[in-house]
Image (cartoon, rainbow, N blue to C red; front, side, top):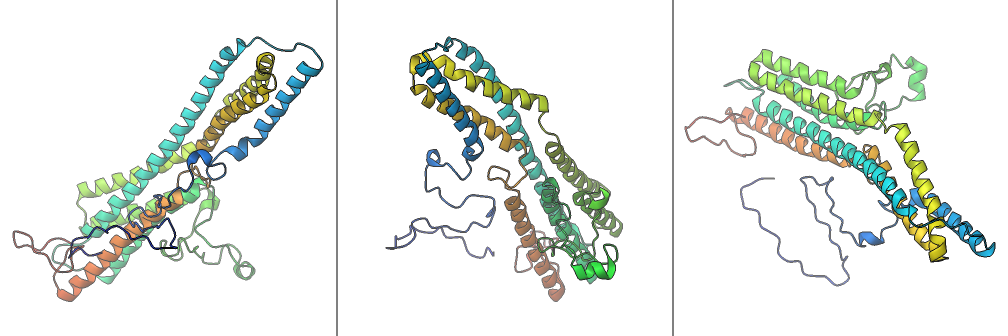
Length: 384
């Protein structure tokens, strides 16, 4: 995108007979991670996509059947098996407190995971910006090896969020394509150069070997390559010692955020709490028909069904938010977020290559995002 002419806001659309009602427009910044499809149905009428109805259907049906059994015994055997309705408030307070604690804890895990992913993408942006604008010496053009080193490092930098995503999902070896049978017959697992999957093919350097089978995560392995580039940049005079220290701090932020997300992933809710919560919830819903049968009669089935639907639904939401790094609809949109980061940084990389080529042809260093050499107010040439 160039900025020679001002952007014009689109005018009102003229409806076309027979056209699709909902028109989707492209939005390149955060294109993948923001919702562009309008909701055609109110959320109150949603029962499949994004809802927890499927996972709570069996408990709700079982409690409804239990209520039918309780009412049948009470009605047809003429035995008074009802309980005082005053026990409902006492039990409901306990159940409510446990569900609030459960959902609040799960939401904190979800929110902390999202914030840590933002920390990673923000550090990637900062490092990419500094690598592309500060990796050169005054009055000297970059040679081909230095350009290749910068571009390779930026691509590795983009690969880190993808590696974090696969690591948190337990998709070990996701960066590498599976070996063919003929390769195994020729050289086994140790003599064949690993091939990269399409998602990583233009991100990681060819011949990179993963060590996940030895216990080393790919995200941590890639940070070594970023740290090595910062050291090389310091030796070349690209980065001053304070600047190199700040860049290392950004790398440390990536590792720290990745470690926090790893903690969320491998630390489940205490099993004692989960067991007691399930048992208390089931006990409350089983006692509920006894406390209502005398006053409500067969309406008890409907009331019990609605109550169990509500309580088990809240508990189901907590279950889904507990591990927010998977593929469920309510999980963090990690695929979309890391793809947006990739598009953004690759746009910067393309602009950097364009600026470097323009500077080599004209002999004067240019500035990114300008098609011509833009002099500063003092007459000096701006940095690339």
